[in-house]
Length: 308
Image 1: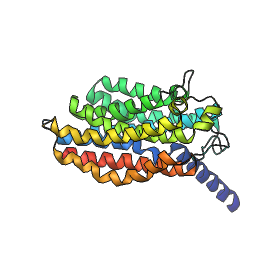
Image 2: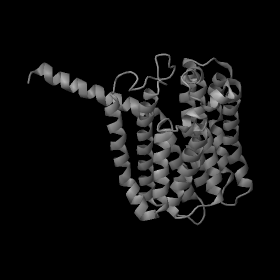
Image 3: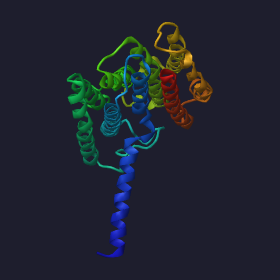
Image 4: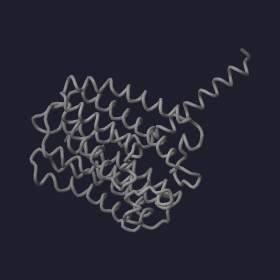
């Protein structure tokens, strides 16, 4: 084989690897990381519970793999439904741009789900059958977000499911696999995480409102309209800061260190200004990334406050 052929093959493999990385959407993986960190902190910081390293790491790996698989599936499903046309304002998608074929993405979805089964099996053995129920529900929710015969993301339910699975279930589930129990404090601590991760989706859907409406994708932004959706984004961030502010007054296990989340408040100003004032366009991509960073930052600060 000639040197040029070898270099061409290596270049092709590198191109496919970059395409898979693009489809994995690494900038969105904070959605899986932040709730696990908060669940870790709750298991370590709340009185009467003990941090357990192996289930904690398994929960993190499983959450990240399920998020990547869902991203692959969404890339594929949106392409099949024509939702990622040339008018798209967001980052390019692997299928729509021709970087990966439908078959390559489908195989990637199956492969990542198989990988996710490894930490999943360990967690089922160590924490019980409820983990199997949560895992299967997460897989179904990820695949049917924009896929399957009744894609709930096309029917205004995306925000509801994101709040439940990437907020309440992700935080509470991480806590459960380490401690074998659940309590009201952990449920309430999951709300700021759920609100900020759902706010990311709201930015995305306001940005894509016109294109989604044109292809028949009825997101919550399409149903509510641009103005109401923008105020919904603001309300979600307000609740995300309100909950940690109030919790220490009602639960002895939680200290006023939770107020440390307010250190991240200056970072909401730029995305809020964009979402409330700008027309959907490239600035919304910046606001989306800023909201994702806020989601992670608030999660880390919330975890610190819980642990202290």
